[in-house]
Length: 193
Ligand SMILES: Cc1cc2nc3c(=O)[nH]c(=O)nc-3n(C[C@H](O)[C@H](O)[C@H](O)COP(=O)(O)OP(=O)(O)OC[C@H]3O[C@@H](n4cnc5c(N)ncnc54)[C@H](O)[C@@H]3O)c2cc1C
Image (cartoon, rainbow, N blue to C red; front, side, top):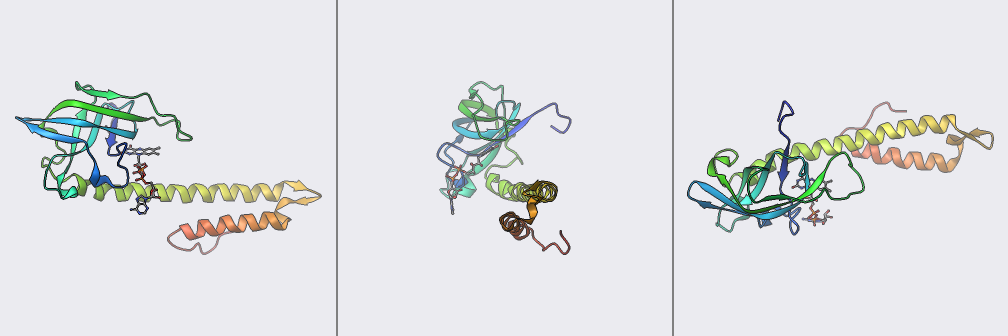
């Protein structure tokens, strides 16, 4: 993965389960030295291009959602793995988003990530926090850059004989946007024009 030779995907979300990850229905049942996986996933980034898929599946039967979940590495060329066409979406067009189907897919039990079943939910909770934080940082940084460019433009662009930043409504709009960005940052910006 690090050298770019293998593309991976993480398959958590299902048609009926998104935020409530403990309710996933995809199941992996132990049969000899293999797990046999059945279920379907949706909205999977890199789904089309993936060579290896980290599948979130129920392996246990305790009824305590979090303890029954494992992460299983599934090579995308295994028999029973099917990929949909990339889903059409409004943005992020450079990144494919796909449905994945698993029908009686056999993988060796050694493919459990971390080597032990029942750890999946904890592994996800540990790593997803980073992902969520990075999305927040990216959104605020991009908004700030766009606002700075917009302020520069409104100083340059003239209408009715003056720069449009001098119109009261433009200033209200820019102030609203700046407020949202400042509120989204963990610490206030001391000096920011
Ligand atoms: C571009 C894109 C890429 C994605 N890539 C992946 C991927 O690679 N792998 C993967 O597994 N998934 C992926 N997803 C799916 C994503 O993780 C889910 O969309 C997300 O978990 C939310 O699930 P959901 O869409 O089913 O929304 P739902 O769970 O149905 O939630 C919808 C809305 O209901 C409300 N809601 C739900 N629960 C609560 C609650 N407890 N409290 C208050 N409000 C609540 C919130 O407003 C929430 O936004 C991707 C999605 C997109 C759009």
